[in-house]
Length: 295
Image (cartoon, rainbow, N blue to C red; front, top):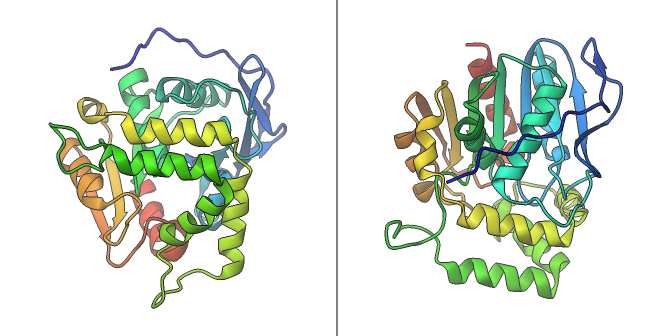
């Protein structure tokens, strides 16, 4: 599916010593600088955020991981958070090249690679594109893999018309779209309020910082990229976590299929959990991740 001839540029912008970030950016190609946060000492863990958020979504995971002997690297994908917002490069090939540059720049090995939602695509693509170099374990959380779009050979997928409607809403009024999307994301309804209005506003603010163009381009990438043939390239122990009340990325068309395709994988289903379980089920998620990383 992917062209592996692209070699990401090396970074001369980032220096790390004793697990402390000395510069907050890594250059992945000319005029593209990705914001990095690098904390702690121990087993390296790279956290890849979901759409349309930024690395700040991992607030409740970073503390727990650092306190449990992990070196945590979290970054903003191009176009999101405080990273550069180029016009191009929102395909999974390029975004995975960005990830590879980060790994090379920090000279990491024995990595646990963690992808939430859209970020699960970069995890899988890193194995198909780079053989999983330096990665010893993988964690997919509420991941979009292996393939979301409804096609003749993927009849359980989401119809293209639904993704088209989302695109139209973003183009018409992106902030209003984010307001409704956030409520679905965290499972907010008349009977259930698992997140405060203040935090809901905060996550909306984080999403609003993204480039409007990147928001649209990445939505197309995660909704149309077919990872099915690449799933078997994930050749390390893999933990898959998903909520059974996720309406954003339904478990039946994503993680249940992913677990059947990745050879050495384990699926944990969180009962009653929505898409944004990194907050609504943060204690359980942290415990499961830490146990897996150190197992």
